Length: 220
Image (cartoon, rainbow, N blue to C red; front, side):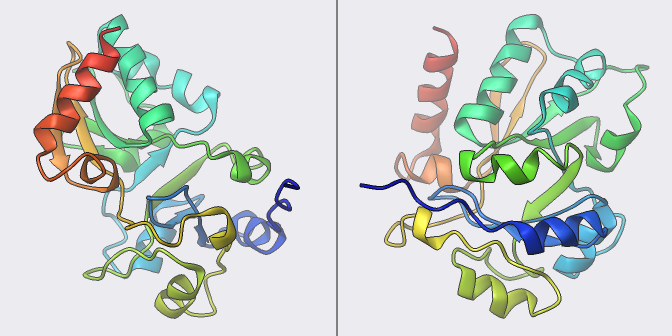
């Protein structure tokens, strides 16, 4: 079977470079996301207050390493956090060190002493993300509505003013989709579920089983 054609990222790349929002795909069963180089732009697209916290998208290694000194995590927990972001594709609340300055680009992601981080690096998006090392991101939905799972839903929800990078052909249309699971990691690496989402629901109705699986995998 031939490899799929690369995504045509020109329109969304131009929007991001111009400081506007864009709707980007994730692998199934995750929904689409809204991203921008400024947090207020993400919030405006979603129809929520400009100053609301927005996840920092640490898809770039430099962005992740730049946070290291500010994160209140043991070395083992730091490794676990990166695994959760890169491999499990969750949204993660990570504690910051008291008295340690938080890097300026991360301040919009600061919530109650934790940074809200997203770290997915889906291969079809790599050429686009490589040009935007600093991005803010949130589920692609207007406030109060469900996140969108298809290109058509994204266009209907956000209108012509927000370009959509459609990738339905690379996703599983028959799968149930949801926003990412949100976890909180503690300094010692222990995990807590903050918001149910696609990852834990794929493992059944009891999120405790999902957390147990994660803990077992991280302990190896």
